[in-house]
Each structure stands twice: as C-alpha cells, then as structure tokens.
Length: 370
Image (cartoon, rainbow, N blue to C red; front, side, top):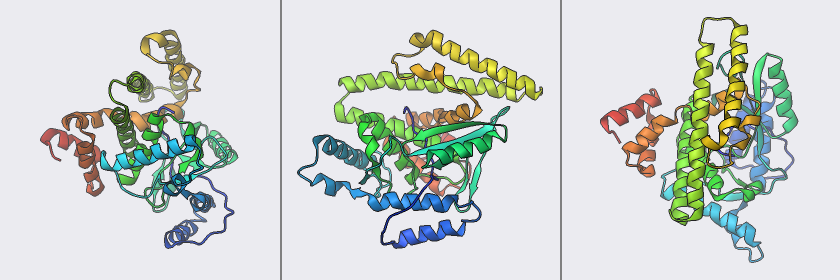
C-alpha cells in the first residue's frame, strides 16, 4: 500500500483463556456499557482485540531464541529499530506498541467500510460514545464488512471496502506487529509504524481528516528519513525510493485535482441527475488520461493500476481524507528547516490546543511560534 488506511474500530470474535488486567477490565466495562447503543459492534470488536493482544509475544524475547530463522530475526530487528527511531529521532510517543508480535492467518488485518453521498462529498459517519464520530468502520471478518457495505448501498450511497494493515488504539493497548508484515518493504513498514505512532502521540477528537493528514505526513516523511539515515543518500534503495515518492506526490496531486473538479460540479445549483452524469464523465476522463499519459506522469510502475480502480465518491473522499491538506504540514516542515523532530514538537502542542488546529499551524507559520 502506498499509504495506510486505518480504523480504530475493527470486528472481533473471542475464544482465549486469559487473566484480565485492570486495563482490560476497564476496556470491557466501557464496551459493555455501549452494547445496546452499537448493536453488539464494540463488544465484538473489543473481544477480538483482546484475543490478539493475549497471544502477542515480546519481540525482545523472540530474538533471544537461537533457533529463530534469519528472515524472522531480520524483520523483527528492523521493527525494533524503527520503533526506537520513531521515539528518539522523530519525537513520537514511547510506549509498548510495536514491541510484540502476533501470528495471523491472513495477509492483512481488517476490512474497512466507508460511504459517501453520490452527488456530494458528504461522508456517512458512525458515532461512538467516548470516541466521537468516524467516517469509516472496520471489520475483522470480511463477510461482516460486505454486509455493512450492502446495507449502505441500499441507502443509495457510494461505498468502498478497503483492506487495512494496521490501526491505532491510541495507546489504550500495545498495538502489535502482525506476521503478514514480514513481506513489506523497509519503507512500507516504517511508514506504517510511524503513521500509527503519530496517532498515539497526537489525536484530536472529532477531527478525523486532520488526524489522518497529520499521520500521513509524519509517516511518509519519517519513513523517508529512516531509510536515508539507515542506507545513505547514495544507496540504490534510497534513490529508487525518491522516484517512488515523486510518483506518490503526483498521485496525491491528481486526486486533489479530481476532488476539486467533482466538488465544483456538486456545488452548482443544478439537478441531481446532471451532477451524476457529469461525475461519470469526469471519472472516465480521469482514468483515460492516466492510461494514456502514464509514462509521462509517473517514473515507476507503482500506480499502474489506477486506470482499473472502481472510482466513486467514497474512494475519492477517502484519499482526500488522508492527503487533502498535506500542503499545510509541508509549509510548517519547510519553516522548521525540514527538521522533522522540531516539526513534531510544534504539532504536539495541539494536544492542549482547543481551537482549529489548522489555524494553530497557520499562526505558527506567521509568527514562528514553536
């Protein structure tokens, strides 16, 4: 994945025998208290989460096994290195997340459902007591995600299901590393861990888009910085990564333009039928241009499948949720002389800020507040 879609709420089933800690008991009490309000959703989620955490093994303990396969030793050592880097070099939260390992019999973690009105960028949201509103909902069991998606389609909404690699419990639990991550590139693993650790470090209630843009920015830049420091600027891996990152920026820019073009149509005082017709025309034109001009637009084959994507408002809005406001973060990054640690130190002040976080950043840009 070129960037991480994550969700706090994910579908669960439960079997293990275990001793409940005080934190686990508190969590169970919380989800039970909203059992009726959420039609069993949160309790089912929480039990599955506890199941995974109960089977997690400490990475430091695993690495002491002299019979550990080299492939597993290398990836777990790398993950430990990335986690330490996220704390010491970037300034993210120093907690127990990504210090444990879980075997899982699938190639990803959850299926996340999101939905949007067909004739405007208005997301469907799910509301959860204590946690606020979320424009996505995750499921460990694929069929549950399909059922939710079908329910939303019956409401005449554009719907998207995404396979997701990780999510943050915001420090409530120690988020583990999963076995399927062994197949990821160094950059992908670093981006994933740093993205999720950003959520655990800075999280503003009911500001999902801001949180995701922030985590995307720090995750992508932190991973690039990690690769640079680990392999050097003259390494082939770093050089190839720069080409990929340039393509990633192109991808983000194309979808920002697509969002703006569609939104301009949706805001017009015209009929719904006209909006839907223009929407499909814009989608066809967008995909046609990508296919025809791919080799001019991109340096690598990483985004070759864009022309095959089933585009709808839910898809475009999801990408915008993670990337729509990235430029503001890069302005701050430039103001901080491309020092990611200093940039994160400024952004961590948002945890105590009560107003608009974007205004806080703009004021930091204008007055140089740190």
